[in-house]
Image (cartoon, rainbow, N blue to C red; front, side, top):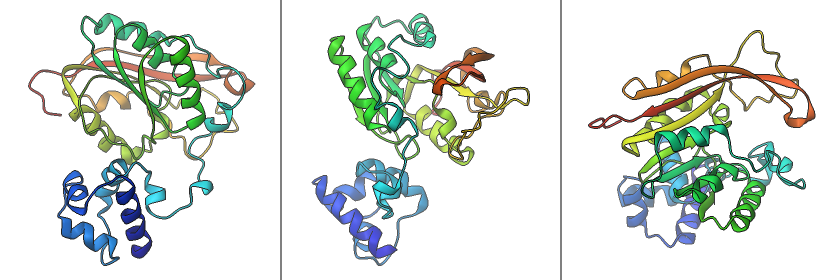
Length: 277
Protein backbone atom coordinates (compact mmCIF):
# COMPACT_ATOMS: atom_id res chain seq x y z
CA UNK A 1 0.00 0.00 0.00
CA UNK A 2 2.73 2.50 0.94
CA UNK A 3 4.51 1.88 -2.37
CA UNK A 4 1.29 2.53 -4.33
CA UNK A 5 0.59 5.75 -2.44
CA UNK A 6 4.19 6.86 -2.82
CA UNK A 7 4.11 6.34 -6.58
CA UNK A 8 0.84 8.24 -6.82
CA UNK A 9 2.19 11.17 -4.81
CA UNK A 10 5.31 11.27 -6.98
CA UNK A 11 3.33 11.17 -10.25
CA UNK A 12 0.79 13.76 -9.11
CA UNK A 13 3.51 16.05 -7.74
CA UNK A 14 5.36 15.94 -11.04
CA UNK A 15 2.10 16.60 -12.90
CA UNK A 16 1.61 19.77 -10.84
CA UNK A 17 5.22 20.82 -11.45
CA UNK A 18 6.08 20.84 -7.74
CA UNK A 19 9.36 19.99 -6.05
CA UNK A 20 9.38 17.90 -2.88
CA UNK A 21 10.19 21.05 -0.92
CA UNK A 22 7.27 22.96 -2.47
CA UNK A 23 4.80 20.14 -1.79
CA UNK A 24 6.08 19.84 1.76
CA UNK A 25 5.48 23.54 2.36
CA UNK A 26 1.94 23.34 1.00
CA UNK A 27 0.94 20.46 3.27
CA UNK A 28 2.93 21.60 6.33
CA UNK A 29 5.42 18.73 6.56
CA UNK A 30 9.18 18.43 6.04
CA UNK A 31 10.55 17.62 2.60
CA UNK A 32 12.07 14.51 4.20
CA UNK A 33 8.54 13.32 4.96
CA UNK A 34 7.56 13.74 1.31
CA UNK A 35 10.69 11.84 0.26
CA UNK A 36 9.81 8.97 2.62
CA UNK A 37 6.26 8.84 1.22
CA UNK A 38 7.49 8.65 -2.35
CA UNK A 39 10.07 6.01 -1.50
CA UNK A 40 7.45 3.88 0.24
CA UNK A 41 9.16 4.15 3.63
CA UNK A 42 6.20 5.80 5.38
CA UNK A 43 2.61 6.91 4.86
CA UNK A 44 1.00 10.35 5.24
CA UNK A 45 -1.00 10.93 8.41
CA UNK A 46 -4.76 10.54 7.94
CA UNK A 47 -5.25 14.21 8.84
CA UNK A 48 -2.87 15.19 5.99
CA UNK A 49 -4.74 13.28 3.27
CA UNK A 50 -7.47 15.91 2.54
CA UNK A 51 -4.90 18.71 2.22
CA UNK A 52 -2.60 16.51 0.14
CA UNK A 53 -5.45 15.56 -2.21
CA UNK A 54 -6.42 19.22 -2.51
CA UNK A 55 -2.90 20.37 -3.38
CA UNK A 56 -2.42 17.53 -5.89
CA UNK A 57 -5.84 18.15 -7.49
CA UNK A 58 -7.18 14.65 -6.91
CA UNK A 59 -9.44 12.87 -4.45
CA UNK A 60 -8.38 10.68 -1.55
CA UNK A 61 -9.49 7.44 -3.22
CA UNK A 62 -7.29 8.04 -6.28
CA UNK A 63 -4.42 9.05 -3.98
CA UNK A 64 -4.78 5.70 -2.21
CA UNK A 65 -4.79 3.84 -5.51
CA UNK A 66 -8.45 3.09 -6.07
CA UNK A 67 -9.31 3.28 -9.76
CA UNK A 68 -11.42 6.25 -10.73
CA UNK A 69 -13.65 4.08 -12.92
CA UNK A 70 -14.68 2.09 -9.83
CA UNK A 71 -15.97 5.19 -8.10
CA UNK A 72 -19.36 6.79 -8.45
CA UNK A 73 -18.62 10.30 -7.29
CA UNK A 74 -22.24 11.33 -7.19
CA UNK A 75 -25.52 9.85 -8.37
CA UNK A 76 -26.18 13.10 -10.22
CA UNK A 77 -23.32 12.51 -12.67
CA UNK A 78 -25.66 10.49 -14.92
CA UNK A 79 -28.72 12.66 -14.28
CA UNK A 80 -26.89 15.78 -15.45
CA UNK A 81 -26.09 14.09 -18.76
CA UNK A 82 -29.75 14.20 -19.80
CA UNK A 83 -31.03 17.00 -22.02
CA UNK A 84 -32.01 20.21 -20.30
CA UNK A 85 -31.20 21.31 -16.77
CA UNK A 86 -32.16 18.81 -14.10
CA UNK A 87 -32.85 21.55 -11.52
CA UNK A 88 -33.84 24.22 -14.04
CA UNK A 89 -32.05 27.55 -14.34
CA UNK A 90 -34.03 29.67 -11.89
CA UNK A 91 -31.96 30.53 -8.78
CA UNK A 92 -32.82 29.27 -5.32
CA UNK A 93 -34.77 31.60 -3.05
CA UNK A 94 -31.70 31.54 -0.80
CA UNK A 95 -29.87 33.65 -3.37
CA UNK A 96 -32.19 36.58 -2.81
CA UNK A 97 -31.73 36.33 0.96
CA UNK A 98 -27.96 36.44 0.47
CA UNK A 99 -28.36 39.60 -1.60
CA UNK A 100 -30.36 41.21 1.21
CA UNK A 101 -27.80 40.30 3.87
CA UNK A 102 -24.65 40.95 1.81
CA UNK A 103 -25.48 43.19 -1.17
CA UNK A 104 -22.69 43.34 -3.77
CA UNK A 105 -21.75 46.97 -3.20
CA UNK A 106 -18.24 45.69 -3.88
CA UNK A 107 -17.16 42.44 -5.64
CA UNK A 108 -17.63 40.13 -2.66
CA UNK A 109 -15.89 36.76 -3.01
CA UNK A 110 -18.52 34.03 -2.99
CA UNK A 111 -17.97 30.26 -2.99
CA UNK A 112 -20.78 27.99 -4.18
CA UNK A 113 -20.12 24.54 -2.69
CA UNK A 114 -21.44 21.61 -4.77
CA UNK A 115 -22.87 23.97 -7.38
CA UNK A 116 -24.48 21.31 -9.58
CA UNK A 117 -25.41 22.76 -12.97
CA UNK A 118 -24.51 26.27 -11.85
CA UNK A 119 -27.85 28.11 -11.70
CA UNK A 120 -27.06 29.80 -8.37
CA UNK A 121 -23.41 30.52 -9.17
CA UNK A 122 -24.38 32.16 -12.47
CA UNK A 123 -27.10 34.22 -10.77
CA UNK A 124 -24.61 35.55 -8.22
CA UNK A 125 -22.04 36.36 -10.91
CA UNK A 126 -24.62 38.25 -12.96
CA UNK A 127 -25.44 40.34 -9.91
CA UNK A 128 -21.90 41.52 -9.23
CA UNK A 129 -20.35 38.88 -6.96
CA UNK A 130 -16.90 37.40 -7.63
CA UNK A 131 -17.91 33.75 -7.82
CA UNK A 132 -15.97 30.52 -7.44
CA UNK A 133 -17.94 27.27 -7.65
CA UNK A 134 -17.15 23.58 -7.59
CA UNK A 135 -18.91 20.24 -7.89
CA UNK A 136 -17.95 16.57 -8.05
CA UNK A 137 -20.02 15.89 -11.18
CA UNK A 138 -18.19 16.89 -14.33
CA UNK A 139 -21.39 16.61 -16.39
CA UNK A 140 -22.98 19.25 -14.17
CA UNK A 141 -19.99 21.55 -14.53
CA UNK A 142 -20.14 21.29 -18.33
CA UNK A 143 -23.73 22.58 -18.22
CA UNK A 144 -22.77 25.23 -15.67
CA UNK A 145 -20.07 26.61 -17.98
CA UNK A 146 -22.53 26.67 -20.89
CA UNK A 147 -25.07 28.52 -18.78
CA UNK A 148 -22.44 31.03 -17.70
CA UNK A 149 -21.47 31.61 -21.34
CA UNK A 150 -25.10 32.08 -22.37
CA UNK A 151 -25.69 34.56 -19.54
CA UNK A 152 -22.33 36.31 -20.12
CA UNK A 153 -21.37 35.64 -16.51
CA UNK A 154 -17.84 35.02 -15.30
CA UNK A 155 -17.56 32.14 -12.82
CA UNK A 156 -14.46 30.20 -11.78
CA UNK A 157 -15.80 26.63 -12.02
CA UNK A 158 -13.68 23.63 -11.07
CA UNK A 159 -14.20 19.97 -10.24
CA UNK A 160 -13.71 18.78 -6.67
CA UNK A 161 -15.34 16.48 -4.14
CA UNK A 162 -16.27 18.41 -0.99
CA UNK A 163 -15.27 15.40 1.12
CA UNK A 164 -11.66 15.90 -0.01
CA UNK A 165 -11.43 19.58 -0.91
CA UNK A 166 -10.32 22.09 1.74
CA UNK A 167 -10.15 25.86 1.39
CA UNK A 168 -6.76 27.60 1.37
CA UNK A 169 -7.97 31.17 0.72
CA UNK A 170 -10.64 33.44 2.14
CA UNK A 171 -14.17 34.10 0.95
CA UNK A 172 -16.74 36.66 2.04
CA UNK A 173 -19.69 34.34 1.46
CA UNK A 174 -19.96 30.55 1.48
CA UNK A 175 -23.15 29.19 -0.06
CA UNK A 176 -24.36 25.60 -0.24
CA UNK A 177 -27.85 24.38 -1.06
CA UNK A 178 -29.04 20.77 -1.18
CA UNK A 179 -25.69 19.00 -0.89
CA UNK A 180 -24.46 18.84 2.71
CA UNK A 181 -26.14 15.47 3.30
CA UNK A 182 -23.24 13.93 1.38
CA UNK A 183 -20.91 14.79 4.27
CA UNK A 184 -20.78 11.94 6.82
CA UNK A 185 -21.11 13.00 10.48
CA UNK A 186 -17.47 12.24 11.29
CA UNK A 187 -16.23 14.80 8.71
CA UNK A 188 -18.62 17.65 9.47
CA UNK A 189 -16.66 19.31 12.27
CA UNK A 190 -13.42 19.36 10.25
CA UNK A 191 -15.06 20.66 7.08
CA UNK A 192 -17.01 23.40 8.82
CA UNK A 193 -13.98 24.52 10.80
CA UNK A 194 -12.09 24.83 7.51
CA UNK A 195 -14.90 26.85 5.91
CA UNK A 196 -15.20 29.10 8.96
CA UNK A 197 -11.47 29.67 9.23
CA UNK A 198 -11.38 30.85 5.61
CA UNK A 199 -14.32 33.24 5.91
CA UNK A 200 -13.58 36.94 6.39
CA UNK A 201 -14.82 38.67 9.57
CA UNK A 202 -18.36 39.81 8.89
CA UNK A 203 -18.66 37.14 6.20
CA UNK A 204 -21.80 35.10 5.63
CA UNK A 205 -22.59 31.39 5.47
CA UNK A 206 -25.88 30.52 3.74
CA UNK A 207 -26.57 26.80 4.10
CA UNK A 208 -29.34 24.25 4.17
CA UNK A 209 -29.45 20.57 5.14
CA UNK A 210 -31.93 17.75 4.75
CA UNK A 211 -33.25 16.69 8.16
CA UNK A 212 -34.45 13.25 9.15
CA UNK A 213 -38.01 13.16 10.48
CA UNK A 214 -40.04 10.11 11.47
CA UNK A 215 -43.14 11.52 9.77
CA UNK A 216 -41.37 12.16 6.42
CA UNK A 217 -41.27 8.97 4.38
CA UNK A 218 -37.86 7.98 3.05
CA UNK A 219 -37.43 7.31 -0.66
CA UNK A 220 -36.69 3.70 -1.47
CA UNK A 221 -33.67 4.69 -3.59
CA UNK A 222 -31.80 6.52 -0.81
CA UNK A 223 -28.17 5.39 -0.80
CA UNK A 224 -25.68 4.73 1.98
CA UNK A 225 -23.60 7.76 0.97
CA UNK A 226 -26.38 10.17 1.98
CA UNK A 227 -26.43 11.19 5.62
CA UNK A 228 -29.42 13.25 6.69
CA UNK A 229 -28.92 15.62 9.59
CA UNK A 230 -30.61 15.82 12.97
CA UNK A 231 -33.01 18.71 13.45
CA UNK A 232 -31.01 21.72 14.70
CA UNK A 233 -27.62 20.01 14.24
CA UNK A 234 -26.40 22.54 11.68
CA UNK A 235 -26.76 25.41 14.15
CA UNK A 236 -24.47 23.71 16.71
CA UNK A 237 -21.45 24.31 14.46
CA UNK A 238 -22.05 28.07 14.67
CA UNK A 239 -22.11 28.78 18.41
CA UNK A 240 -19.71 31.75 18.01
CA UNK A 241 -21.45 33.19 14.95
CA UNK A 242 -24.45 35.49 14.73
CA UNK A 243 -27.28 33.40 13.32
CA UNK A 244 -29.43 35.99 11.59
CA UNK A 245 -32.06 33.51 10.44
CA UNK A 246 -32.81 29.82 10.87
CA UNK A 247 -35.93 27.89 10.05
CA UNK A 248 -37.18 24.37 9.34
CA UNK A 249 -39.63 23.52 6.57
CA UNK A 250 -41.31 20.45 5.08
CA UNK A 251 -41.87 20.66 1.35
CA UNK A 252 -42.96 18.57 -1.64
CA UNK A 253 -40.38 17.45 -4.20
CA UNK A 254 -40.55 15.77 -7.61
CA UNK A 255 -36.84 15.09 -8.22
CA UNK A 256 -36.40 11.72 -9.88
CA UNK A 257 -40.00 11.85 -11.08
CA UNK A 258 -41.36 10.42 -7.83
CA UNK A 259 -43.46 12.67 -5.58
CA UNK A 260 -42.08 12.81 -2.06
CA UNK A 261 -41.41 15.19 0.82
CA UNK A 262 -38.31 16.58 2.48
CA UNK A 263 -37.64 18.35 5.73
CA UNK A 264 -34.94 21.00 5.57
CA UNK A 265 -33.14 23.32 7.98
CA UNK A 266 -31.92 26.61 6.46
CA UNK A 267 -29.49 28.95 8.19
CA UNK A 268 -27.80 32.31 7.55
CA UNK A 269 -24.90 33.03 9.91
CA UNK A 270 -22.44 35.93 10.10
CA UNK A 271 -18.88 35.58 11.37
CA UNK A 272 -18.27 38.01 14.21
CA UNK A 273 -15.32 40.41 14.06
CA UNK A 274 -12.40 39.18 16.12
CA UNK A 275 -13.33 35.49 15.93
CA UNK A 276 -10.62 33.22 14.57
CA UNK A 277 -12.84 30.23 13.84
